[in-house]
Image (cartoon, rainbow over all chains, first blue to last red; front, side, top):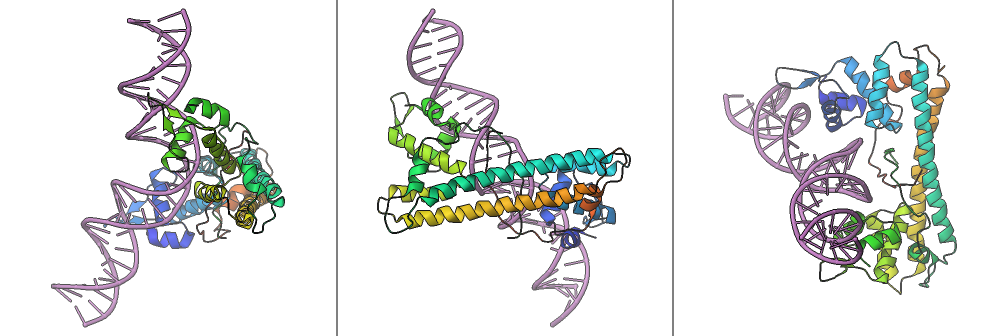
Length: 148
Length: 148
DNA sequence: CTTGACCCTGACATGATGTCAAGGTCGATG
DNA sequence: CATCGACCTTGACATCATGTCAGGGTCAAG
């Protein structure tokens, strides 16, 4: 199978297939005489794994760890489960953060008449000193990418 | 006020203050003879507005629209409210997407013994053909950035 | 005058992905 | 055979908000 076929079969763009290869998530596939990539069924399964993990919001470096465990026939399932549960918490935190933003926004919107008059507590609220003071670094990135 | 002071006062990094200037969200401030930026109270308020809007997950181009409405004394509050409610829905969608991932992940994890044995339905599930078939583009980006 | 705390600009990095360009290949049809 | 369209290859640039670093100027206190 060449990359186009694999792309169709897995729903992963050719661009991304090559990208995963370039960053070492996917092994470098065999090449035909013409230089075309030639994928084995095992590679395709691996790509599916990656795609599923991305769909669940794992980042590439986390996936790298998961693939390591997948490749290791002797891993303890507890290791995998720990990663999964940790990631689930992460997702919960991110969802909660979004929900908090939404709540705040709706509170502001509640006070807004929403008619032709210009006075608007939403804008007024935004102009006030920070609610949530200092920001720290807390990676977000759990890339949902869902077909809406 | 120079940029350092403004940064402390608003919690926005100097880097970002300059960035907002460079992309036109913030007006170019006066300069002192030495070239240092000199901010007016009005600018600071504007920066606060931007920071608050970012905290609520608005992206820069949306903030640009909000600022336009803020500047326009004759806007109808309904315009602002519509944007706010739309954004709230967006946040809800994103949160729901994260929740869906979490649920899926927990379902997988439920079946996993989590002990020393190597068999693991989580990894098995990830290796299966795509659950959620094709991905479309659906911007995520609601950048939470909360101090955890 | 020196030192340390600022400020300035500009450039590069991040992460996952798209897109575009320039070129090689393959298969089918004229 | 020539050619066209569909496909593959690589490489580069763009996105978005933000950090960080380098190299240089400024200022105030000692």
